[in-house]
Length: 248
Image 1 (cartoon, rainbow, N blue to C red):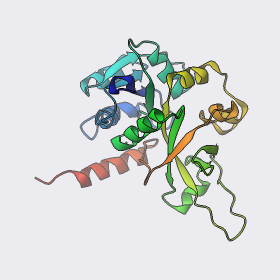
Image 2 (cartoon, rainbow, N blue to C red):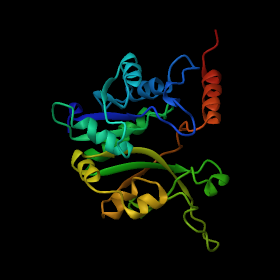
Image 3 (tube, rainbow, N blue to C red):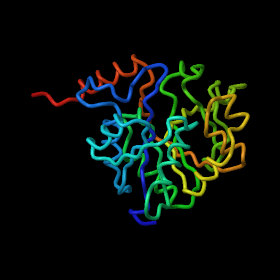
Image 4 (cartoon, rainbow, N blue to C red):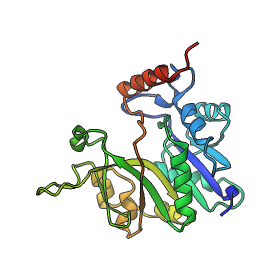
């Protein structure tokens, strides 16, 4: 796999229920989407970073950040479907694609590179997990949990506490990180399948792969990246930026 075969696609839609127009929020000096794309552009394994957007305003943000942009249907059902739609518009050969959500302005570029490495080693679908930041997240449905087999392959993802702790033998709960890598063939299969029962029950698109018997390799990362879903998340992000900014 050569570097030119590896593409990062950032699905970005303007509508957001809990924080309207969140990807355009720019109180830091740059929109959230721009921060995310700047992180993706630091990946050593990707030579193209493409925002799959649903409106001209987000396309303009992407291009100003140094990324490419393609306009996709606002009515697509999931981020993975949007990534697949973007791939259909591209010229040239693609052997690996990494999907980074547009509201991940603190994404670690090394995690993107590790995902590409796993795909190059033969995985068809890859995602990440990290230890839960604190025990209160175990019962938080917004914090998606994952359990893996002994080879690091996903057994199940759930918004419920996972796994159940029955006895004294404690199992470390793992938080799912919503970064995905796929081969184009696996992504095409995903988009051709209808949403599955468990996927609809949990509201988790990755379960579509598992319900069809597709293996998902889950890489363990040292920590999660705080995504932005609410105003509180955004305020916390602004505070971290202020804290990390060099003094003058």
